Image (cartoon, rainbow, N blue to C red; front, side):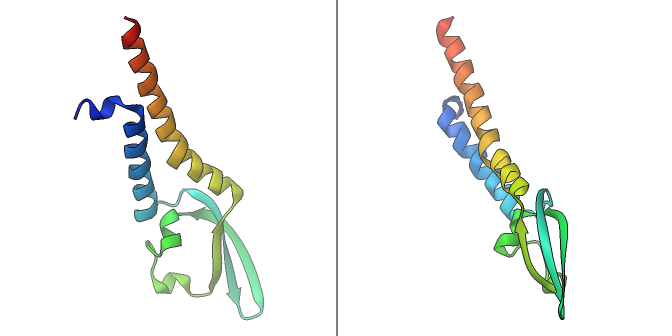
Length: 106
């Protein structure tokens, strides 16, 4: 198992899958988004943090969606999701890569 975590690619894949599952299966309201409410003719847009689990149907009940026409992430939310899901595993893998190169020099 120790040799498995010495490879940067494995570190990236494990962290990527872990964070992807965490953010899509657990309702953590962290990403900037908007909810569009519609009551009759009146339409209202509310900026609020959203969870990625909402987009696959987890983390809310049907009563929570009464009056909700749509919800979506803002560009800041997409950037934040990309940073958490892709960049953090990439940084960890790069750290393992640098540490591995240092031991070869010694």
